[in-house]
Length: 168
Image (cartoon, rainbow, N blue to C red):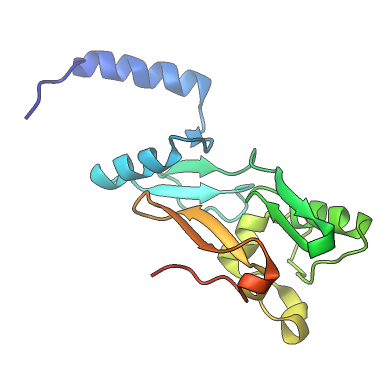
């Protein structure tokens, strides 16, 4: 076993400083997010991914927030494809698509539901009866799984895929 670099007292001071700047203990995803999940797995620390936090029932978990991940990664109206990040709200995406004379058949229970939540909860609403579930509207996906691995499935053009196929 390797000796510790810092004493337990030093680590406690670091925790207090971190808590002062981040009192809710929320991580914001970046390049290190996958490593943080791997670390949490090793230390048996509970991790919860949240968008707006409206459905986060795990109080003592380290939270990874998607709230700042609201960007459009790509948008090709001529091909009828768009790539968005998990923190974008369903209502925002619908407005963006409407400007291009397109629509999204997802009737999430609230327009401020994030895309990540809609995918995770399969929150399609009544449109599922006629237009299928959220999975039927996704042709490509990239996410970090519970082991801290970056998983990619599907593609960016309709001719390549039909619904996302998460690698097993």
